[in-house]
Length: 315
Image (tube, rainbow, N blue to C red):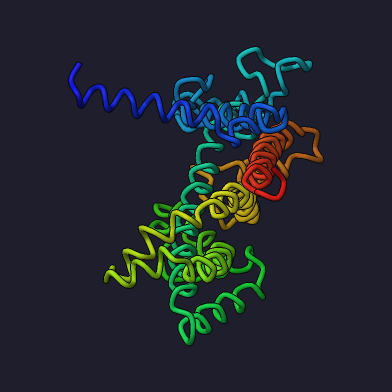
């Protein structure tokens, strides 16, 4: 065995040993709530990613949709069909398949918007906390102004402006990215304020002062030395806000300003089913709604566990 291979194997063994002895892993393995929520989240992610492979039908293949199959109840009810386990909607699409495909869009929008908000918030928080003075005051006043408006209102405002600037066809083509922009711009403040407060503590420590003395650039100090020390709380916020982003996307889609009906998310499916709820076809909205509740609850519980696990006062 060469020295390089030996060093690589040694580093892998050391990494595994540190992981096995970590407080985070111990906390996870001794928390039934965290394990169950992680399993549910992983199953939901896997089902959404592999929807084309595991979905019984393709709800967006017009050649396979028959209007004669519309409004069929779930398979275990009278009039149901074994081919449609959770029934069909008003267009004859399999509800189970639409949930799997709809979850893909909801999760995609949720992850992308959280990443977008995290990048903006962390950068602004680093700059505000390290620079201080007028720069900090201006950036935080902008954040305070945005905090005075509900996140859903900011998202509606951004979505409405872009709808007015773009034609209907152009908007439908980039509707997912518009939602990412709208939700991301409404969520960056929490990251910025948290990172700013942590950076104001970190900038007084000796390793930052040593970096300044040896002539490191501000960018190097911020992104290479300070940022790794403030990412713990950011990870907790991101986990919790993933659930909020999914709920916000569902709310916007339910209000009719989300993704187009040709590519429905869970919120769009709930809105479509709501029109038939009181006429007896409850399954069209109840099952997508239950899937949304289970997914958001699992992510929230996982975020709550992560917050407690990373809190040194609770160890």
